[in-house]
Image 1 (cartoon, rainbow, N blue to C red):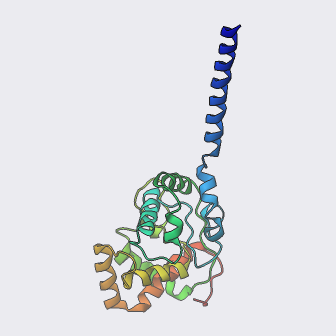
Image 2: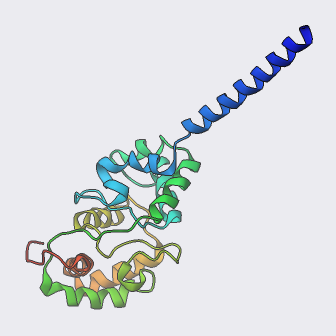
Image 3: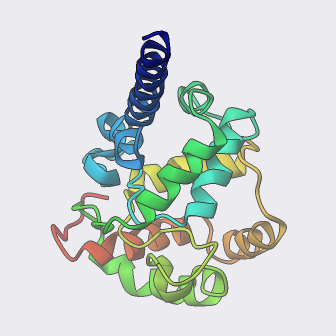
Amino acid sequence: MAKATMITALAGGILALGLSATVAADDTPTAKMLVDTCAGCHGTNGNSVGPAAPSIAGMDPYVFTDMMYAFANGDTYSTIMGRIARGYTEEEWELMGEYLKSQTFEPADQTFETALVEKGGELHEEYCESCHVEGGKPLPDEEDYYILAGQWTPYLRNAMSDFQNDRRILPKKMGRKLESMLEAEGDEGLDALYAYYASFAGANQGDDE
C-alpha cells in the first residue's frame, strides 16, 4: 500500500512538473507578441501610419538589433527609444528582428515635390547607391540594408539632423559622401533625395514638401 502511494505521488509530481513547464513555455512571449508592443508608434507589423516614427517592417534584422543596442546603450540619441530598448533582452531583439524582416514593407503614403524626384535619383546614384542599392528598397535576400525608399520623409529629416549634429554615429564613408554632396548641392540636394525616396509610394504626388 505504501509502495502504491509512493508511485502515485511520484506520478503526480512528474505530471505537475510537466504542467509547470507547459505554463512557463506558454508565458514566453512570441516574436509577434513582442513586435505588437511597438504598434502604437510603428504600426501593425511595423508599418507606421505617422510621419514621426519610421516603418520598421522588412528591416534587416542585423540593422534592427544594432539599432536597439545603440539605443539601449545611449550610443544613439533618443527621447524614449533608449528606455524602451532596455526593456527587452538581446534574445528578444533578435526574435523581433527576424519577425520584422518577414513582414512586407509598405511605402508611406505622403506628398512630395515631383519636380525634385529626377534630381534626387541622380544624386542617389552618385552619392548613395554604392551602399543603398536599388534606391534604398528592402532587400530580404541581402544583409546590412537600410530602407530609404518609401520611408517617411519627416523621419529621414530627423535622422539626418541627428547624424549632422553628432547624435548618431555617422559612418566614415557616409560622412565623406554627405560632405561632398552638400558642398556641391547644399541642402537642396537633401530635399531632392527626400523627394526621390518618397516617390516610391507612387501616391499623393504634390508640392507640399
